[in-house]
Length: 439
Image (tube, rainbow, N blue to C red; front, side, top):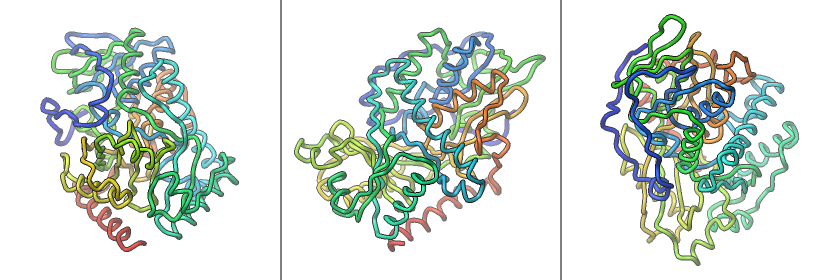
């Protein structure tokens, strides 16, 4: 079960993020040494893996979690901490292609995901996660995108029974954001924000405190079947289990044991910057409601206020490492929206990988009779990955939960996989051009 080039897990850099700088101290987990027995071995200690471990243990089964680096090193500790009940594919698009019943089921799954975050924060008492659910504002940069956002919101209310949204005019968006550049927007209730690394560390602490073994710096370098089960081998040990879960998402190519899943994903680097703490009068004018915000451009930027800092992120970074050009582009976009930040220094800048799929939705289920997986969160993974851990536990128990379009059998390999990076650059460049000319 190994193929292709893999990254060197022994030389992984630290992350210079706001979340690392402000997180609760990380619990030290041991390195796996020798052999362990378990009902389920879980590869990856991000939201998916830890949620799966929690729900499997609640079922009375014994999981073991193996992490190549340390819990939260990957996407679970690098993301923007935005929680939304959505997929990259809109519910209206799902309805048009797959029918109303499927759209309703996907709507239910999306809202289950945001509720799951709240449930896990409550279950483990993760107050340091600073979870808020004050909603999200989609801010429109021209009249055409405002009309599209309003039409979409009205359709959701009418056809999906979604909570009524609040339509904002130019003055309303200015009051929400402190920015003059938007023509209007839509406030969607129920979304929220979180300190993503504190949430992750709270999950890891809570799961470990309930007796689930978690091993860090223990990459699975080989997965092999044996009679009645599966063996996950690390450099210094092994776990024998009846089933395995792969929860590595965009970091699946860290070792050959999971690299085959990478051929179903398009890794897209997402960059984030955070300012120094703002003077109180300026912080009070920008995003005073504590909501999260997105704009309507194709190369969508998002922003939020955290501890009197503007956190600003978006896609468009390329390559395998942090990109100064991407950070410069983000800063330029941020100052374009908030001119008052022109002279405010940046305190943090970091990036991470988003896992895109061909059909724009995640996928979960069985790889074979002993191996399960959940991957491809398409940039909306904080909530969805938390929920998928619960669904993975159901699959482990032999159940067949209705996961709608997320069914593993729908996951397709990326055609012409070696050309994925230039293709991403080409598409992103075209989107940037359209945004630049106001289309």
